[in-house]
Image 1 (cartoon, rainbow, N blue to C red):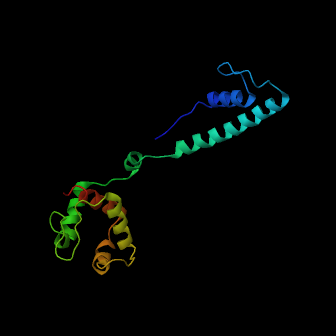
Image 2 (cartoon, rainbow, N blue to C red):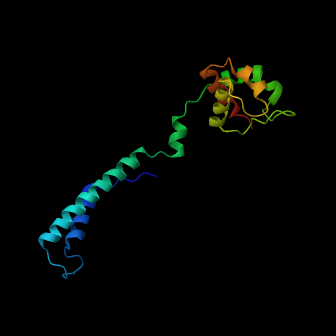
Image 3 (cartoon, one colour):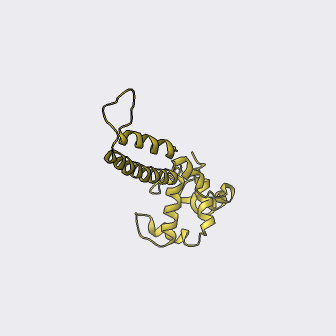
Length: 154
C-alpha cells in the first residue's frame, strides 16, 4: 500500500504542536524563543522523517506490481519444449509420474529458478542428474516459455 503525505501539512502541524500554538482553545503555553527553537527543530525532524517515509513508500511494491514486472514467456513455444523434454517424466498434464514431481500448480518464479539452477549445473534434489542435462541447453527465453506453459497446467 502506498501513502502520499502532504509535506507542508505535516510540517505545519509539527510546527504548531511544537510551538505550543493555541489549539482548540488551549492558551496554557506562551510563545518563547525556546519554544520557537523547539518548533524549528521539530519541523526539521518531521520533514526529514516525512522525506524518508516518502522515499520508502515510492520504492514499495505490491505482489501485483511485481507480478506485472516479471517477464513472461510464450506459452505456445513452451508447450513444444514441454512435449519434447518434460512430458515423458512429468506426464502430459504435468501431474507427475512415479518418482518425478508434479509440475502443474507450481508458481512461475519457482519453475524459472529451478530450471536456471539445473542449467547452471547446481546439484540439489534427487533428480538433479536427470534434469541438468535437459536444462543445460535451454536458453533464457526457453526457460521463460516453458515456465509460462507449465503455469497453464491444472
